[in-house]
Image 1 (cartoon, rainbow, N blue to C red):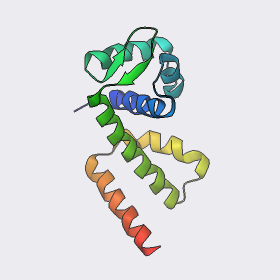
Image 2 (tube, rainbow, N blue to C red):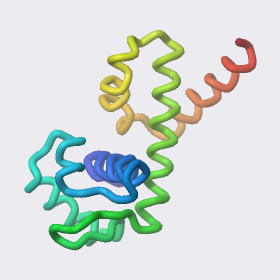
Image 3 (tube, helix red, strand yellow):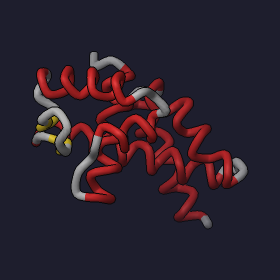
Length: 124
């Protein structure tokens, strides 16, 4: 099982890469509210584990393995964002609330929520 903090980094790198074509240590640190040193240390671990391409003081991009995981995590993130909107969570709180739970929910729960959303759309 992949640790939650690794998933969190991969998701944020994926989001930054989609927006800017790559991520940077400072961008990751800002996004995750960690120090640049902590982000750099984790980048080294992610590189070692085969999730990212990274040269110190350079840009960061996901490997194929990292991209696949990032895409799945992002899709799950989007499902939860939509779910929280539908159940009436205040718009300005949705992102924060999703970030609090998204890494703790298993695939089965996300699958069930996705099914609920599809039914909700049909009946709306």
